[in-house]
Amino acid sequence: MNLEKFLLRTEDEMDFLPIIPLNESDQEDLNGIEVPAEIPLLPLRNTVLFPGVVLPITVGRDKSIRAVNDAYKGDKLIGVVAQKDS
Image (cartoon, rainbow, N blue to C red; front, side):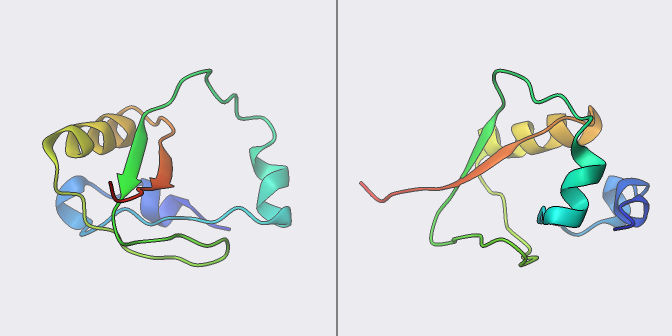
């Protein structure tokens, strides 16, 4: 998978960050990536992500926007989870 077309764009050129699924062929390319013990989590309301599906997401909360921007600028990982209504 050619990720460069997404990674080389500036924030002004990109309307959303793509959610790129990991399948078996992609997993081989990512085996060298070290996952930190702690990563920021992005809880999604009314949205469930499934493997193999690319879906644009809208980030609205200030904390979430900061987490996504920090991860994007610093080439870091971010976890995405479904939020349970309370």
